[in-house]
Amino acid sequence: MNNQLYEQENLIYRNDSAFNYLLNNAESIQYNQFQEIDIFEDGTSSYIQKKNWGFYDVLVCKTNFRNDTISKIVLVGQLTNSKNSLALYVTNYDKPLKLSGKTNISGQIKIPNGLTELAYINGNKGNTIVLKGEQSKSGDILPKIEKNIFIDISKYTPITLDTFDENPVIINSFDETTRVINLSDMKELSNITCKGNIVLSSNNELKITNTAKLTDVIVSAPTVHIMPGFKGNIQIIAKDSVNIEEHVSLLYPSSIYIKNDNGKASIIINDYSTIAGGIVIDGDTYAGVLNRSLIIHEKATVIGNVYCYGRTQLEGKVIGSICTDKFFLKTKSSNYENVILNGTINRDSLPKDFVELPLFINNFNERKYAVIKKF
Image (tube, rainbow, N blue to C red; front, side, top):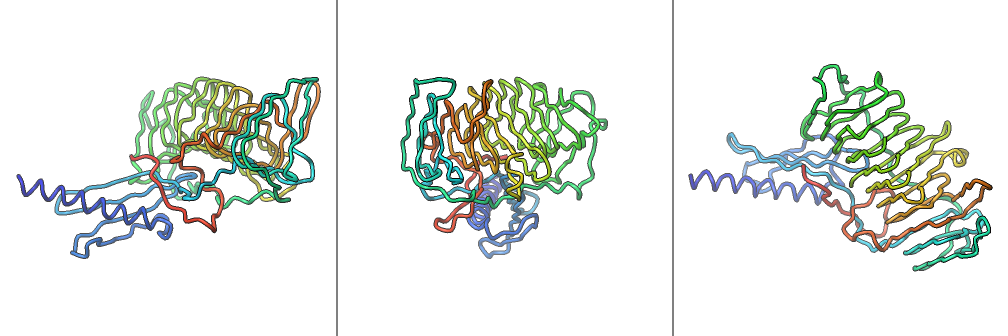
């Protein structure tokens, strides 16, 4: 018994050591290839693998000895060692950023000509503007992100929900083959539980109700509509639009991603909804900037990174950072350019150990992988 316990503890120790090697060398390890390593060079091998999962990566480490196997599977992101306190970046088109109402920005800001102006919207004279942080001039182009999110589901055989019982519970580990569930014949997803290494895919608009219990999955469709009351942890990859209705909680690490150059693309975060992780609207051409828009309503909150190669209307709260080509404001009576009304951007309140979206190449500070969650 003591010998068996010793062997198991030794196996756990070996697997932990192999995992630490994987974590520290993840940047140089190729995706989707099992690699055999003998961490102590004594004939006992471990098997490591790195998989892409939306904005993040999954690390798998397994060690075998006789008939016993120890494994560790985690979701990781890239953690920057530097104190990056940039709260706001707005491209410099030589048009000033105007602030109105109760607007608060904490953290470094890079804006057109390094200056802000006051705006009086609808005759409002009670502006309360709070700026905490260094102001400097932004560049004439929006920094390009390095991440191109793409889920290649062509190598998997899709299944439909017809193969499951009513109110199915579908769980798939990240050390198994990804399961792709084709929902193209469904307009609405409800009364289902999905967890883990699963892609919910549709070629049409997909509505997700609050009776769908989704954890760690990817949702891929041209248009995604999250209905009121939904709570879950998902990464959304869309092409045309994402609408987050009221009272929705997208738990960390959740994200929304759209890349579109061929038509209008929009993301709307409605009142009383929260997303923890990040939002990205991107494209390859400047011509599409006016067709790409993000709206964060007054009582909505985003925790993490916001990147919009387009126009952003901010009336709610961002705990983290915003990088946008320009701002806009549409009221009942008029349209305004490069205006923030009653918006809050607080980079300083983002937890120090928060693993942000790996958007930009960092040539000055070493980036390392950090564990977000264990499976």
